[in-house]
Amino acid sequence: MSAQQSRHIFVRSSLAASAIALSSFACSDGNTDGPVVVPEWQSIAAGLEAPGGPCCWTEENPDTSEGAGMANNHAPLISIDSNGIATVSLAAEHPMDPASAGVKHWITTMYAKNQDSVVVGFQDFGQTEVLPQWSGRRNPSLEFAIPPGTTSLRAYSYCNLHDHWASKVERF
Image (cartoon, rainbow, N blue to C red; front, side):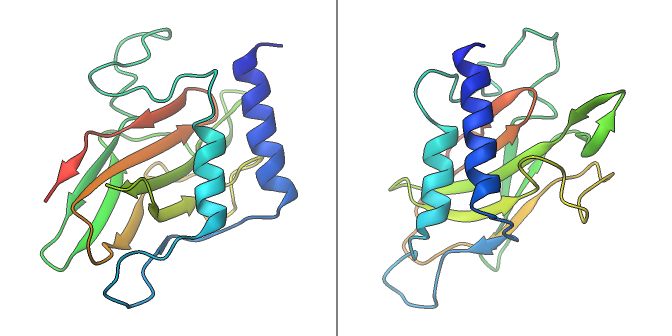
């Protein structure tokens, strides 16, 4: 078993064992001092970003092991509206299927970090199986209010088959 496969199994089992099934949330508690640190989100991000595996593939440095175009449906994009709501999405559809062509394939996690590497938005789509509310969809996304004091964001998306992907850093 490769180090990458071991990391996949460790992360999925750790998350499943802790019974983490979070919806999308922003980590601001309404104060003006900045984001609230949610330890579970920090822990999950740290596990996905563990040494020994690629963290992260990007649009500029894509995983080409399975052909061209991998970045389109894996590298996250960030858009920010005039009300300070950030949306993390993908440029193209991505399967969220428990068994697509006989292979389980889905985005397990999307999250965003601020300039201090604090996870400020998080969405769990299911670690060992696609959560029922996401099964069959083709548009995983994360929406959250940008916490006060945030000056930049970087989004991350983790695919159970194609690893960890990161967006460009968005500064504002």
